[in-house]
Image (cartoon, rainbow, N blue to C red; front, side, top):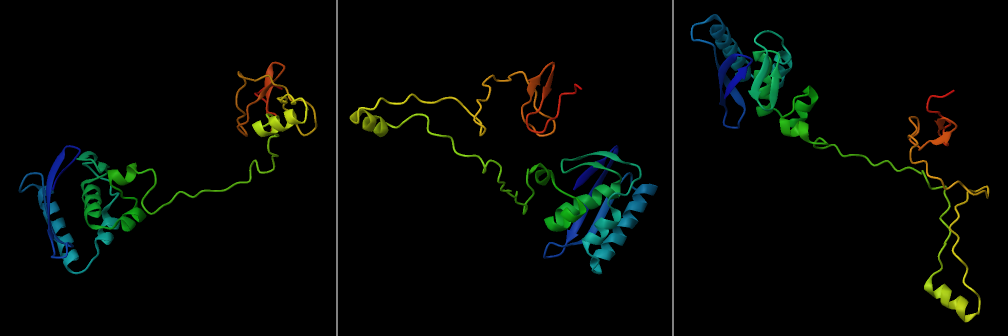
Length: 211
């Protein structure tokens, strides 16, 4: 594959075993015969010998990712938009190609599709049941049904007018004025009510900043 880190362009060829495991790496960076090209060629050979003698890919990824030296910066890889060095980019790319999701998740290496998922694979959002509102009594029936109206008419009893007054448990009528301009309480989220030139929370008692 071809890669670019900042203004440095390179090529990487991976030789694989029959089962798909990497066994050899060839790196071409900078001009042939330059110091950087020679160092990267020697480095690729040492990694290849390590893979052939059983060193796991994860060991190399843990050792060489997050190394910081120039060239560093933006890349042309949509899965790895920034690399702190050529080594950092190469082994992040190799991790995405040859390591399992579980191994990469432990190292914080994800593809762009995995990062865009609202819930990562294998992680289910838990649902927490609460008892909020369970202590409230059900609303009384305000409008009689058709059968109840017919029964009252048959008995000669005048139907009762529906009671639309909302009362609290103490028996006093609650104010029906809607505080449309009142802010929400920053502590508990309940809509505040006006108290003089300020607003106060009827739930927790917090104020809007007035003393």
